[in-house]
Length: 597
Image 1 (cartoon, rainbow, N blue to C red):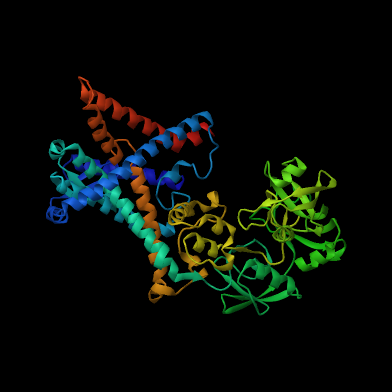
Image 2: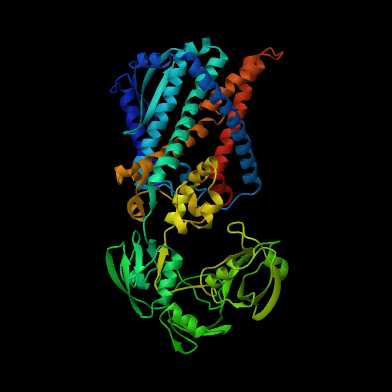
């Protein structure tokens, strides 16, 4: 049984037990049960709401702003969800990790993108969000003269997950529509305000107090690779090779190429030195590669022992053995292979330079560009960096057993402004990821840049393309927990666990030391959760705030129409929209699994 089923079973068992205790009168009157939710009510604290509600003009102006925002989001949400539902019905998407039902739950450990390590920060953000949300309802209730029956806390089984304010139904009926609308909108207004404050602090002084630590961050080592055998693992930083400091992947690769000995000295975290016995291995492969080699992530790598009859143990020796030859005979632990040597192109975009010249989107291997010999993806990227948009260069390719040369007019690379082919390039040589070391880089600088910080030289083109205005930073931050799916880098859980080793502290909050990372995590997840709460509550469906605002808006419109049974018309409008929203949500959550499976 998977984790989600265990949790659902626990919720059901708890709900049955709590209901049984309630029906037998064992639970006190101030404790109420609704499924796995338990609410504890009190009439204390209403005096505090009265004091907070004193500046009535301020709170009305504040909630009017929030009401306008909520109405815009309500309309946008309705259109988006209906469009998404129609799209799913007409084109059922295949089930993916993103659209699995459990990933719509904000539960760490159940949601694939929210690890258990961030549960305390998410719970904190949720508590803040629910307290300010319900507090907003309470304050505006008193501003508009609506009595508050009770206040209290909400428990999910035994976990406190928020607070609530219970306005009097009779007082609500007596209040004018504008007052009720402001009261309903106050919660989401406060959630959006918390989001803005948290992001402002995060993008400003907090991220300004964090910088990338020296060295190349390691997210892991390929199984059986020299680095793996030497004990270099996730959370380490490679800071020097044979005494040469390295801070970027390019510097690491250059230092490895310059190191002549098979066994090299590697400095880790600036304080520990390990010996790495290099050997040339195939750490990864693309389907359909000309060597017909397949490498799975959990398998020991395939070893390359000789090229064209020359023994090799490093990438430098591989390059020397290949020379200017377009083909190479490899002696591997999986047998002998003969391959064309070049940069493997996995995809060619339509209407882009290489497609316009070759009229094909099928995979191919580039063996020369602009007269320069291309033996790997690195060679191709370096050659393109020396070109300009509009330049026409000869490109030699190998495809379907033959070599041809095309004149290609380059476009402009949107990331760096250099020449652009419009292709996806597989890292390595001829569809094989060859390495004599075997570490995988963690994009520490990229994450810091995406959060508005200084990621240094290793921040990458993704950060340059996505970071920018404050609104853009907010948008990108919301995507970071889904980074592996959206922007092709590992998901970002925050500054937790081994990840902290990739950063150092200084700047305005440097005096907090490691506490800066905790503060950054709290701000990140508080902003993330509060925005989700605000957007979700704007859905125009009862009992959400958006549904309540919809009802008051419908009453205001219908009251001006020459209709006899206005109550029935209002109910018809709100029920129809609410059911449409419910059906759209269910389709979004379960449609890919049910229809696309």
